[in-house]
Length: 126
Image (cartoon, one colour):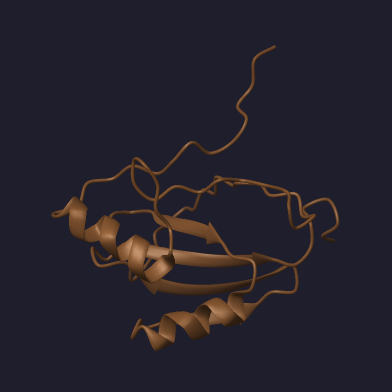
């Protein structure tokens, strides 16, 4: 039987796609032939996965605009946040939930970006 194998992408409208693409490239270090591109690999020994989460209201997404957020995996959240701060990026908040570390920022169009460092695999979390 055919099945879904992963998240193909996030698509949304912005006022200036070139400016937004440059921000993702210059600030987050993510780029590719068709825009910001993430290539999954298991080089680090972890089992990467993507998640589709549903919420009953937009309180988790605020202060982001548009009714959604983008979650991006990082390998070392503390170092990545430090890099962002040297680039003058405002980090809204960060937290260690035990199963993962999270930090949040807004892209130039007001879309909330959630950075996530997986601490335990999904089958290992209790």
